Image (cartoon, rainbow, N blue to C red; front, side):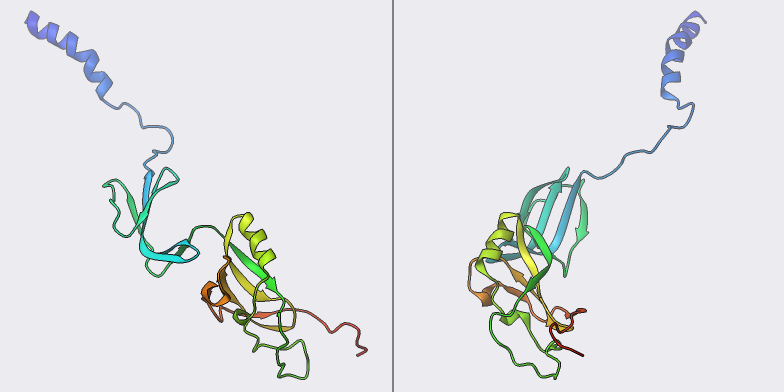
Length: 183
């Protein structure tokens, strides 16, 4: 009997620490620390693109490649048909046409046929954007009412045709007026 009483005295205080007497206050933090962006089109440099995965651990990119080791505790995000770029994207880079183009409308501000992918972006402007961390831009016609079609371009020193990622991205509109005309 004394042994049972002694055992209860020893185990009693220990067992009360194991039992949860009241609920935990606040949110439980079970946020995954590792993420994998898989099956993505990854532009790793201005001249190189791979289809692979990116491993992110606590907000930092740890690994990029086609066949990377994926930890068991990582959350996997399917990025099929998505593009990932190694830099910022300028969402509206207004570009003036560098050559004269034929306008098919009586109003010179209406030129929806203008394809900005045929226009060369000034090297000085590209260099300035690269210094700020931009690697890609949406080049948009600068003037007009129906301005024309934009293009997604990379901002590197290579020839114009190698920088174009997507032509005819969108048709752009504006509220420009013809200055100097009496209407």
